[in-house]
Image 1 (cartoon, rainbow, N blue to C red):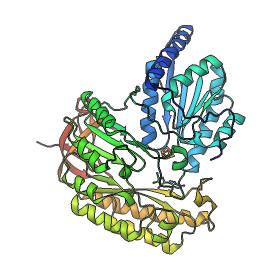
Image 2 (spheres, rainbow, N blue to C red; image 1 turned 60 degrees about the horizontal axis):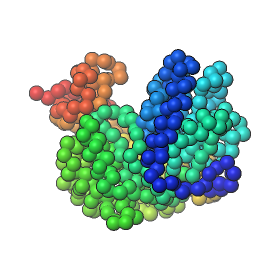
Image 3 (spheres, rainbow, N blue to C red; image 1 turned 120 degrees about the vertical axis):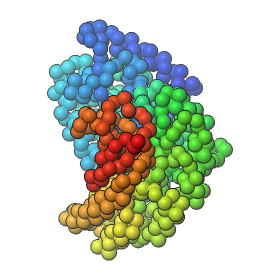
Image 4 (cartoon, helix red, strand yellow; image 1 turned 90 degrees about the horizontal axis):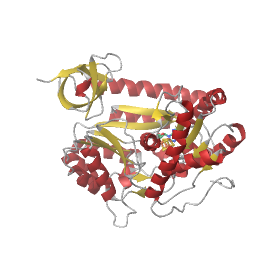
Length: 480
Ligand code: 5AD
Ligand code: SF4
């Protein structure tokens, strides 16, 4: 991608001992925030809003951790002095939403001279976006990307000292900065990055351009992080990467994802392991075997198929066929019979015919997914698919999308119902949103169950009898 803007720092040289340097900036930022607080006679507040995937959600926890150390207090977006949008750009409408929300912030910022606005995440890695912000959204204070969120405190200090919009976007990086603060959303579960970036270049996808090349974290750093999370009360981890199945290939001492899982399984006190996302082309027999024997890996696999047509899969550069995918599903079901399978599907990829679409429906009917995220193809400038001929007309895509959704939902509600009457372990996550005499727990297969109970059950793993299936979730009761 073109990055010729002089304001944009292309260097990815990180000084030695970055962690320490950032803690120094946190101290410095703290002084500025304290001064502003004294002027205002109240604490300065912040709100981080996350768009997009779990990777972004984890990044937002890091941003929150830094902000809290600086002395900001969390508040709802409507009243926050510092509003941060951690953006996604995987589909065009994600970008449109951010511009819309920014427009709404402008009058608030005019009324509150202490207010700051920060933008970060995948969308900021697109040069056209930064150009547009510089031209039409001058009221934004800090703009940074996906590679340098660890520098957040430093950028805040720069903003306080310069009084101007601060822009710092890196095109790519090969560094991983460890041991910075983070503030977990849940006390009992946490995302853990195991790798960053993506090397797959699926022809529709912008992620490899905005998240850079694939880099795996050192296994010891991952294990140490999980051990310290467990010591802090965490019982479930979600290992995060764009393509976890290719973990470890570029490490100094290469290691497979299955080997990493085996090591993580040994951590005492850790009860549940989840991971996402898996690319079918890299899902190994070794991993299937480890999943089959594991006591801690949850019985859920998110395995994006994207399309059921081998012809379209080839144009998507997915590097597997319909048959290969279905074989993989068979193998997984043999090794882990009660596993829940979920997927991502794109409809309306350039050149997709009704026959191709029927192949997708066929895969959906054969696999019988527990749930599927369905997306209308979105043209992302700079990706190979954007230049392909035969873009499918909007009305045709919409019609296919509706038919697909119906099929997916019908099957999912049938699949969900099969567990009715069984007793399963649930991790209680929250008080139920609709009824505060109930709590909500998550089963190993990722389904939710609501049962009578109070907030002291949160974080506990309990045996729950699933009394009634309500389509996509269960009502249950504590097993005797
Ligand atoms: N259009 C529509 N959906 C997309 N995805 C990625 N890129 C696009 C695009 N250009 C979907 C894929 C991926 C999920 C995270 O988003 O299904 O698995
Ligand atoms: Fe996540 Fe991809 Fe969206 Fe970035 S572009 S937030 S990696 S889904």
